[in-house]
Length: 195
Image (cartoon, rainbow, N blue to C red; front, top):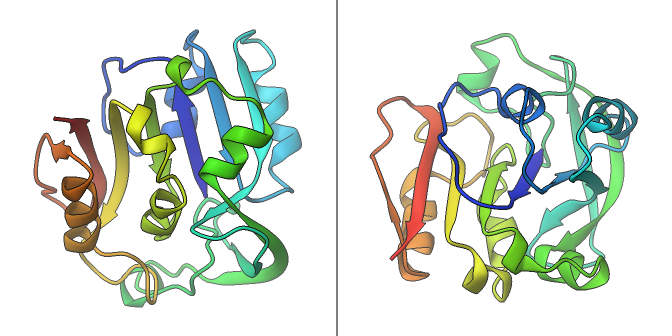
């Protein structure tokens, strides 16, 4: 699970490798929000060469302080989620190999607690393995300051009970964001821009 908030929109190549794109030559103010505490040391090490980047460990959701079972995936934790894998992920031989218990946090709470000035971070990247809608619902106040969001979307069952494309699009449209394209694949990134 990964959420990245960035200084401003930049040219984006949707290659599905958010970590790589942000770490190679990217010099804008950036905050990485990662749920898996085991990944944090490597992430901090990787971004240490970029002075305007920092990492916060948090499991984003629509409620604060909820006990959440976080499932660690077999692919170097890249597909770890609060949800079990669905049919599409299982077809790719992915599996959850362990579980840890984490406390949830709303994005709005995280912003307040860490004294984040959202005017400095108006472009968000959300790759939360099916829990994007939960995180966005926990960002009700912060969304007002966001100008654009690149969000991972699914039209198939990659995670059981995870948000689907139509649900996510409806929520963002109701919050005055318009998608710049329709997803052509069943699991991809879509850019939403504030109207």
